[in-house]
Amino acid sequence: MFRLVLVLVALFVSVVGRAAENHQTGDIKNLTATEKGIMINFDTGSPDNCDGTPHGWLLIKQENTALTSVVLAVWVSGNKSGTVYTSGLENGSGFCIVNQFDPAN
Image (cartoon, rainbow, N blue to C red; front, side):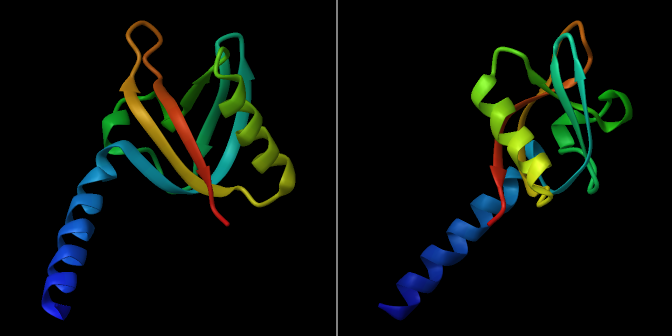
């Protein structure tokens, strides 16, 4: 039974490890607002699927109000750490699109 649990944990960890291409954990080092939405920049860089986003900026579209609210609350709190999940570069703007932000505890 112990071996089965160990194998299942190993499989889970290997699957989670492959997801790094679309997420990044770190601290928000900068934040700015544009007419398209809020843009954040992480101290640890951008996820792999964001290669080519100008200066590492990640865009939270204006219509994503819940996501924007969470990121702004984290920024104001001073505890700026978390994990950002992205869907890749947006056609037209060239910026990487954020689709989830998970604040660290």
